[in-house]
Image 1 (spheres, rainbow, N blue to C red):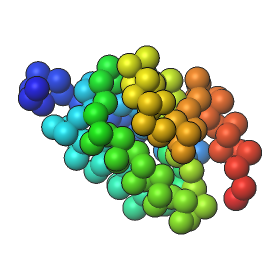
Image 2: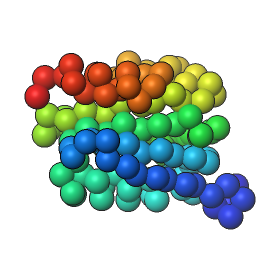
Image 3: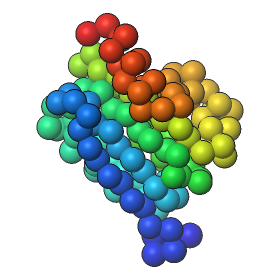
Amino acid sequence: MSIAQNPLSVEVTLPREDVALIVVEGYLDIDTATEFQHHLANQLHHGRRHFLIDLSGVPFMDSSGMNIVLRIYQEVREISGSVHIISPAPAVRRVLDLTGVSITVPVSDSLDAALGRVDASPQ
């Protein structure tokens, strides 16, 4: 599938100074993973420590997308940060569960629940 057929949309907002909410829509695969990675790296560069990744608009994610989520998870752990996945679509949730990613990276049903986990994490 080409990018033209399945463009990726990534919208970043800042619910708090050190928290980036990344809302992703479209296929998160080998063709679009680099764009997703650039958004995460940009937020890390600007001092964000906590990443809330909303995957409710992602009908498909392959290992490229999962690897980027795990990579940012490892990077922010070094600065006492966190990564939380919000509302993954059912097919994506199944992949996260089958691969064990959901054991490492917490999955929440809502933005409020994810923010609550950020507040509960040791600073």
